Picture 1 (spheres, chains in turn red, yellow):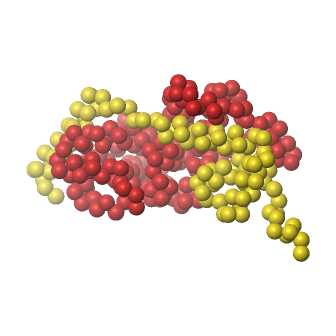
Picture 2 (cartoon, rainbow over the protein chains, first blue to last red):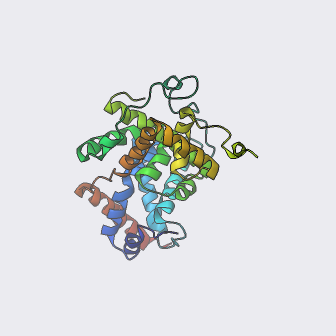
Picture 3 (cartoon, chains in turn brown, red):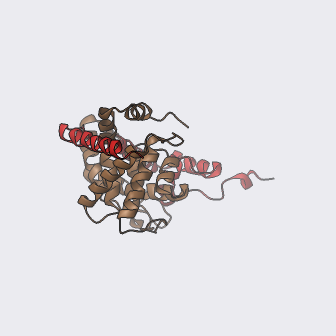
Length: 199
Length: 93
């Protein structure tokens, strides 16, 4: 297993360093709120769930054996709390929208682009454009269907490995990839439409 | 024996390529699928841009950094910590 990026902060929290706890909490608070919101009816309840999860982390951190990364353990605690507080039963991966990720009208009968994507990938190298687009992508992630949002947040925003994401959400690797694929494809459309046409 | 029998069954078309992009980036394609996908990219004028856009999306999402810890948030987390510590002191597990 690769080095746990939170290893040092975890040790400091265990040693009683409240500043280290604040740092750790600040690092994950946004992602936790975003995930919790998918399970419970309101932002206020989501905040309570996240706070409870932090208390759970503090209670358990002395016994945390580092068999998984801290963040995997943390998000598992969150998801379990959210499930018990929430209205939504989740264990299966529903078929959210299984159509093609690019509209069929973009291709000719043979499956070749007839309305190809307008080029913009290069422009993201520009720091000013990238800053603007990363703000836009954050709100676009919030608009994704729940499970896509979870996977994209954990994987692409927080940088968890696919194995970690599967462990947190209790889904198979194949499901994880389907959700990631659909989520990223939607984000591509949103960002594409910021540049021009969002095909 | 014709070499033809060793060729891919059929070329990947753009409509299929866009559905393979994530598996490609995740290194989840079989060797044969990967070869067919890359063969398509090598001659398609448009799919390389599509792949580059997906890569750009991953990079953009990864560039979102958590907001800096505001003094207010810091205070709140520290108070969560202290409440927990005080509870533990009164009611050790």
